[in-house]
Length: 435
Image 1 (cartoon, rainbow, N blue to C red):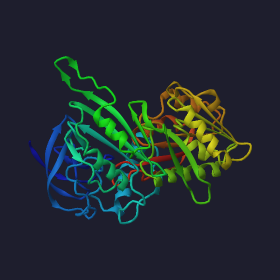
Image 2: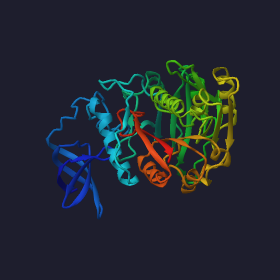
Image 3: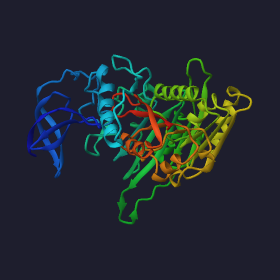
Image 4: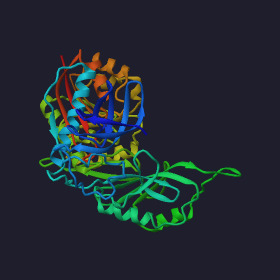
């Protein structure tokens, strides 16, 4: 492959360094601002290219030469461990800020940073959730730019309980020939482990598609290990409990507990989730609404925190399990005021804003990476809503939505939560108020 010289001028939001060569932009994996050297061109298009740094003539002051990870040169699951911890969070946020201001066509504002990792880079709590891949009898992360498996038990940022489970899974034989799947493992607040098996593909044999039938030898071994409080295969519960119980504790507030089905979305760290809860609390204390709509509520994670501060909270979700939501309502009722009303509405939010939500005074929304639909943004602008707390995991789509909303809503604050330390990813939080 061809090589080019690089000089990194800034960071891209994905964690790559940005360099220019022959009036074309190149994204250089593994390079940091101010660094120079040579890079191998992985691919090149008419307007941009992607490279991998193969030599460095000038090392950035932001770089750490010892990231403490034995698989950092192969694994693609973190991607930001080469940056000194005291600089990492702000560095990746600066790249997101630049993109948001440019796409949304808004004047720059000073953001608020919500770090959850210590100055030395260690997490206050290890990641309680891990997603792995099983391919050809091997379990781990995908290697960078390939489907080669990197063993995950050496990972230094996941909870020890997860490391022990991975070691056990690697001892299981025989895995069904040709069977590939994703494995999601969660540790809840009671230190119970839950496993969700998501089949990906089956190898073809001379009779056609390989047929997987339960219970298999390896699945029986997993069940009999008693390591898991609950196991699901696809969307079917096959062992243990169906719900995971998660508690978030904020000083000065009672514990809030929510239930989710195994395999549902959950925050990667408890500390990050607690920070989001505190932001929700501050938002509601500041705006003082009487009614709140929680769009894309999941199993009620933020709904239940909002119910501590607002008389009426309406949760809207298409995928929510009503049983899990009702369990959360019952458990948390003692933490809310006697007159607090919490209700779940199952609806497809891609079709726009429900009328009941349009009549609320404030909205909390935490959509998937796709962001809000154009119809939803239109409905928000024509509703009675006065305040919006928008939480996003994808800055590009957030910026698009801000551009749609900005003529009706003022952007009052912008913040970043270090939800995924040692990766390029953050949660972006924006507070908007009606003009």
